[in-house]
Length: 509
Image 1 (cartoon, rainbow, N blue to C red):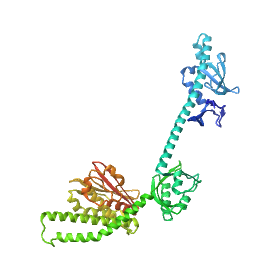
Image 2 (image 1 turned 30 degrees about the vertical axis):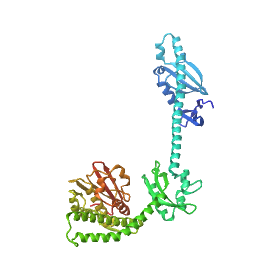
Image 3 (image 1 turned 45 degrees about the vertical axis):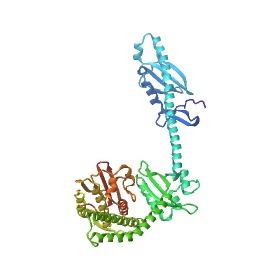
Image 4 (image 1 turned 180 degrees about the vertical axis):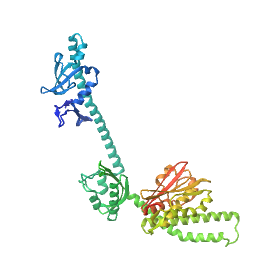
């Protein structure tokens, strides 16, 4: 109540060392919030004090408890009883007994003896002041540091709670060994559940996740427990009233000193509205593309006949306009075809062959077949490779589609006279194929959505290059169907490297 420092009596440990504890009350915003404590080894504590002033090296000091010496700075030498001074003092509620005497060498240097006695008394008070100040400052410093940390944590907790509530983000903290699960209020709201103790995360998910999505969530949790990476997944849950809610989740596990998973953190948020909008957009695009396909085919055929001279010779201006019309018609047909491909992949209706093939031969074939296209842009293709064979399992035609798309993109965005390099490497039984260009790089603001559907960089140069905005999205879907990974690196003004990884079926040759 008085905010005073306190210390405990001396306690002897199993190894014979003496310790004492100093503590003080800790207040946060005028409210009592526990104690800050310091544990002190008596020998270490006193030696630290004595070494802080070189004059104390000239004195013998005994620390007594119950009449027995429990500390001496000169245990191997006889105590100088002639000039010994004994002191009894109260230090923060405890009685300490000390004996102080000068060393024989120091006695010989001091005359008259009275000065020596005065010096001993002065030294004693200096020592006591040092002891008390050190204790107070040490404990106070720890208290201030802890107070600042706790206040900062309290502020951060308030900010986090405000942010998660505003953003409607649910937080999961799973103590795996203790079988305890913490959910913040937003998690309970997302699942439509009342507050109640939770212990088994997988059981909670089994009870509330949409049956068809349970296997996927179980795999993600298992993967997160086996790795230090952050895993993300979207799934559906069944609310108590029977409605379906879409959630997006991020998971990451943490390990103890033995390398075993001991904790998992996760965040969840509602993406139901996004899914509904996405579904409406997909249905609209599908309907429009279906309705456009027949008339576009007819228009393309008619334009082809006119271009072939079926209606007679055309003027130079008419031929130029016809060429533009044919080009745009072909682009719309490619867009419709890409939409159909993407829809098939997403719905699981696109069939993928599962055959072994040589990735080296496949890349070589694609590079050769794209050389004529690259020459139109005055760009060279080079496949840098020292391997003879890399066998992967999958659909060769789909991988050719991915390679063709990435190489054609690299060619389109390379400067005239530029070089597109194709590399292949192997790591952890994965084949990594990289396509490097010398273009201007991917704009910073476009990088996060580059693999999304209908995504194109908002620049006049990009629009001139054409494209449907679905190519990279389709590539990503194909690679992921092969249990692979696709990504890119880019430096503005220096070019980009798009790469994908596929699991190998055998060792390299």
